[in-house]
Length: 175
Image (cartoon, rainbow, N blue to C red):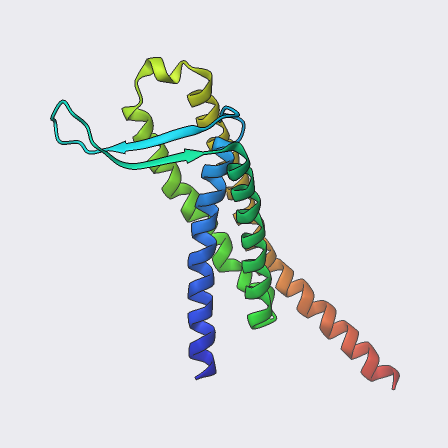
């Protein structure tokens, strides 16, 4: 029963990790591009009629975006620490590393699709170009973090096991 609970916790933490990698990327993309007042996001219904009805509307404040970014960073750290303490092994970092790379690939595909629908005159403005540039920057950073987590998972666990075996073998020989 305990193993099943551990498995479900790992699944939930992996899902939370991948969601907050996306939140981190999007919130970092918006930092610095939002004017001090607000940014309004309106998703309209595509019915082909002249009158468009707003389905989702949100006002984003720069402080909310910055707080969301730091919340995402702290939750990513919490997920990594909690995953480590579930197994007490560095091998538990393999899944978050892989998930961060897959999530970045997924978001880059979505980003390229969305860029196809942005008119060229909108891309010429500083805000849209800056947002897309920041999304690409943080995406590369998250890929590097994913690779580092995977390397820590594989090589760090080996080094930790070698260190523990040398430490305990020296202590048993001296007694």
